[in-house]
Image (cartoon, rainbow, N blue to C red):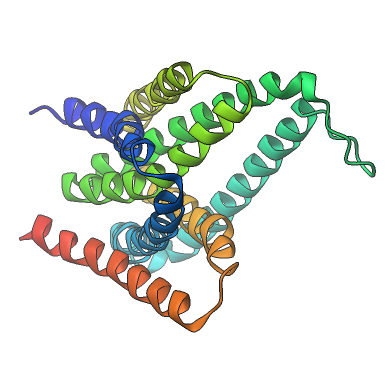
Length: 261
């Protein structure tokens, strides 16, 4: 199968299929769903850390060698800064859409629908970036692309469940929220397509694109997922979190061995 087709299929799996997988939670009773989702988040955290530190960064450093390590580090720092600023802009836009006034915290109910639209815009941007990361990984090696796709799908499933709930809360019907949630996955395909044509003729930039992708995964795991895991700190939950994070890392490491075999 041509490389571009691989990229588009895996970008669709990372975006659209992850939303479809999240539908399973709509059939699970709310109490049971609330119990299962944190476990998926823990596993996704491990998968993202594993993909960033065991696959993307080592591949980037291997391609540049010791001489290019400083540039890889710079790309990593710039990537972390980019994702931090992007999240700030999305949060600011979301708060503005909800009518939150600084220092007062008043929320206007008549702007709830607008907040749902902002959720969709934020999701589309997020999915487009995921598509870019998947394309950059595939352009380096198909096995790296598969691992990146697995990591993207792992963190997208619990993310999509939360977004579905936000859209329903914003006034969308369940059917419309579902269709719109699936539609935002198309942005990952567009992002992958754009990245493919932008990077295929710039092979020297690929290692730095991988470092940028690693920064995105690290930021999502450390700044986005781990703080939520700390909300419950009882020994049993903490032990389960450590186990599932370890399983996520192990799954990526094992998948990496299989794809390189």
